[in-house]
Structures are given as C-alpha cells and as structure tokens.
Length: 142
Image (tube, rainbow, N blue to C red; front, side, top):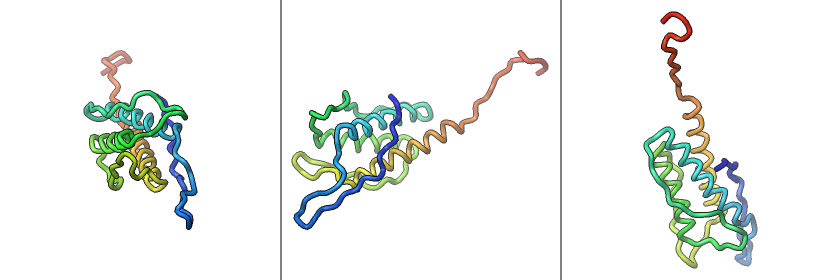
C-alpha cells in the first residue's frame, strides 16, 4: 500500500438557499483516507505493539455508495492508530447515522490533517531510530 498525500485544503460553504457549495467527497477521497490509515497502521506496528484496525475491504469505485458505518470506521481507525501510538489530540470524532449528517469540509480537513500529522511524526520516529551495527570482529580489532 503506497502513501498518498492527504488533501488538507477542503473548502466549502452553505449559500443563502441552504445549498452546499464547495469540494465534494468521492470514491478517490475515501480510498485515499482508507489506504493511508492502513499505511499508518503498518508503519506503527514497526514501532509499537501490534494492533488491528477495522477492515474496509476493497477500494470504492465511483459507482459505490458511502455508508455511515464506513465513515465511522474511518474515524475509529484513526482513533485506534492514534491511541496505540502517539495519543495526540485531534478533536472529537463525530458519529454518523444512516440518512443523517455527512462529513463536511471541516471534518475532512480534521481527519486528513490528523492523518498527515501522524504520518510525519511516525515517519520521523522511524527514521530517527538508532540502529546498532554488530561487527563481531570482522573488520579488525575489537
């Protein structure tokens, strides 16, 4: 699974008629968030104790729908990775219900910003680990 740079500049607003104007969440966005969370989990278990996250199956296609339980699972995965690693504060995760509110640009910026922050911090931690080289006398004196 490859890392894909999160979108952290979601924009939108509601006009005077109550219509949403702005960025739209699509299958590519869902897949990016889902796959980046899987990438973070794989990176995290190299540094911390093993843990699991909710599987969201195969990537979505433009013909697929998003369901509240899937969006809640994205939030749950983010919270699990965060709690099992750095335990940062990324705001309160909303709970979505069928035929209820959907994610808006503010929530998408929060989620993807948190994913990017965890990625940066876990990558720095992984790259900054000291690695001890064993020679066992193969290059001369002890």
